[in-house]
Length: 597
Image (cartoon, rainbow, N blue to C red; front, side, top):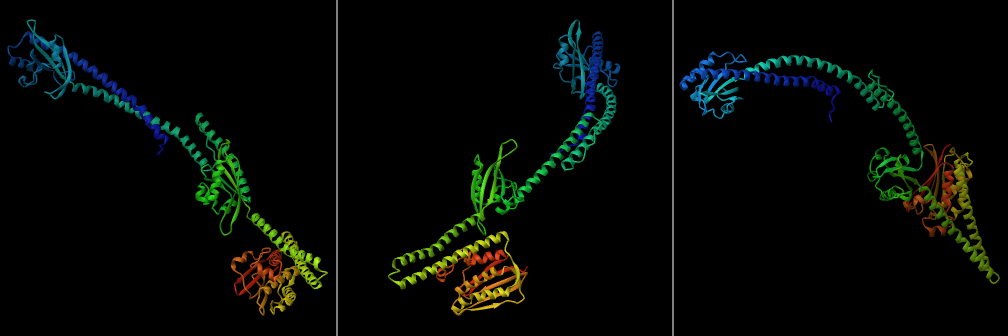
């Protein structure tokens, strides 16, 4: 919509106020002057036609030709008309409407005048008058007609005519004088109107500029106070409004920043939706969980932002519910993310519902810990049950048949001893794992700077007997000056566990290498074998408690299933990392990365 300036809207009204009275005066004056002159002309025509009639009745010509000559003679001698421009025209018309004589035209060429209004009125015995256009003279004429009598009997009609153009000329002269005075008066009014419009528009434009500055955010600016009381009140109201807006915006900005800071610092994701499932707000945690851009998500539909049917169903149910609603969601990606949902009604300042707030709590770690706990309990129970069952079974057999068969009794006692040692190793490993987790969580592991080569040689010495039994050669490669901050006994235990695994899964007569080097600010220890290798699908779970790639073979070879888990927690307690690479049929390489200092 195109807006006009106040001046352009006020000025036409000032112009109208100035010119409208002038137009009315001109119209009224025109009518009054014209009516006055018309009436004056009619009265004079009546006098003239009466004089013409009396003269004609006194010396009535004997025939029409003489009567026509008389008309032209009298017209030539008649005084000027009221307008001073044209003589009066006289016409004598018979009772039957035939023109007997005319001061201007040849009667023989003139039409029958019986139907003329003024003629009809005159034949009734009165005075007829009419104002109309003359087809003969091609001009507007005023006609006045009276009866013509002879010996008291009406024998025709006498008519006088006058051209009214001369009257219009007189009227126009009067109107021109009025127009000149009116235009001068109008010009003065227009000048006054221009000044008044500008005087009113100037402070309004200044206040409009101030309001634009307010709208642009410059709420510190103030509008000047005009002299006019009404405009001064308006300007003061604008200034008060700006001050209040500034105060409220600052308060709202401070509160918004506080809310944003709180939401940004929350671990839980917060997602606000309106009744049409459009995003009102979303914090950093929710954007990270849902893998969306928080800025681009605002104002868009949830379906456009997140394509997750489970979340959509939960939001639909939460919008329909009158109370808070709980649910669960699994976000699939590189790794499944488990999210706990809670949807609560979102209300406006009038307590009317405007949408919902969905809180997303990432419980992936809790779920994984719960799964690990369940698996640990299950695996620990299974691992403990095997030696306990064996001990109990052979003990019962020993009690029943020991006296009768000493040889079997000694064999059963040996089995019981073996299973008891296995049970002891399992309990010891579990206790060790528990202590490592405790130290890792509290960073209480005592460490000192030690030579890495000494730790590796001690670990190799501890495993030489097992390696020799299978004719496996152990090779050590480590610079003598290489040192690291570590707990020597624990790191030795970690390397022993890796060597023990490598020896178990290597072919007889093979080789297991232990290497260490410094690279990239870290110390790397690698234990490599050339055994059966491990499929890549098993790598992520190799360091979990009781996880075995081949359960039957692992139990046959012995061990508790906690060795690699212990390695992992020893390395984590040192602030390092543990990893594995393997090729099926070619062997495996387990690496420990420790910080240099």
